[in-house]
Image 1 (cartoon, rainbow, N blue to C red):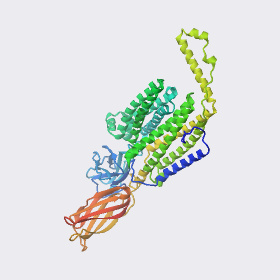
Image 2: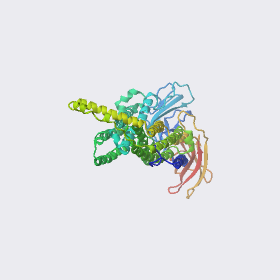
Image 3: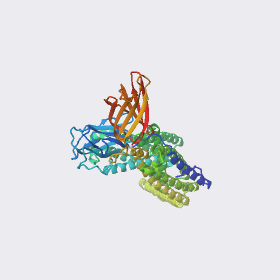
Image 4: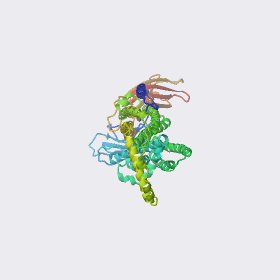
Length: 636
């Protein structure tokens, strides 16, 4: 609640207008920065090309099948499988070979020799650098297409019942984190008396239990989630060991260790701290708990930042601490809001000062959320087309809209906060004072005395609750905060969905390549003619280059060199490199083989995505005379 300036009294008309203007400016700034553009930012890896290409018909059986990806991936023994028309393995079943060069990520598997004609299916599955599983399939044919008994998998990696349970655990983990961190911060910063309130204790402890249980479930299901999709593999010790060796596995184990420290923090907060009566000692303990709890909360938030979207792509060293700040701000705001809701409905003692302190915390959290959210949006979206034309962008629009609604409801909460008072609870001598005769009768009966004490406490609490519920300002605040909490639950769900959705920038980049199981990118042969002069004797000539079929994926490249007299010319050295400067790809080196006098060729030259490629050609005509020339060509 209360994302407005934390003043004490009711806000005049100019304040809602200023808040609305500030909100409009922030939203405009978010979407305006999306148009600024940047270098390529990766998250989910995408298949950008293959050799043979999807749907290709080759004259003879290739020796291997290669796949190119938009970013680094983790592969296993069966990450790439090639199946013949009858469904049998056509590859050697060895671990894929890493054929990456420079910024090009490429893996290949060798095929058996003497493969018959027919249609072959390539099925692949890997783990993206941001921890999410990816998969796909496509076909190619040798000689001519044929019938095949192989059915393309309909279930994506990370789907099925295991995927559903894993996603539920992910949502629960975020919810538990918000309650644990936000509830603890609310007690320490806003309402220290809440340390003795049983509902507040239950809220924080339940947050810890939820986060711990969800983390354990994710750790056990990580192997089947990224692999077989079978629940039984959750208890495969070899699979669990392989998970522990990965970045997501290490992050989950680190989170469990930090949750052990969080358990100690909770024990001190609701034990020693709650019982401490000396104000000076309590102040020192508050500082110590705030520092220790802040370190633990930051560490837990970092377990997400180090293993998901923020850990890969551009400016990862900036994106990860920004992501940590974003998560902490979400927890402080939404977790504190949940705590305030519990305090207003379940405890009679919270006063207006605590509510106003939370208003300040909420305002600070919104400022941090705005700053970090702008950066994250720019990094993961980057263009209007990605904002409106991708699922990630559409979810981001929904998230911004929900934040706007939440801030609007928070404004009404702020107005109720300004009207809050702390009415004294009327005393009832008949209820509070024990009759002398009864006091004397129970003085020798400790059990009876304890029973009466509990009854008096219950009566006092009931009277406080009755007076609290009769306060129209407090009732209005409760309804307003309840509405905030309902919107916040939806907002948290959308935020969690964003963490598992392919960012808009990456989706658009992948669309420029050749995705699996889709039609090959259109293109045409590329023909270039480039004069050169190395400056030495017989150093002048012309380079002619043909690239076929001139599209993304595998291409054949031919180079002819003619001398100044127009006849074929041999040179001691010839090198080429391809660079897509708009996407920061390359230079991709190409070393052609000499076929005949003045004629060189290179096969299976991979073009990972369509664009305006710069082709650099280095020609050496003697030991000391060489020159590099270049020309741009539209490919794909």
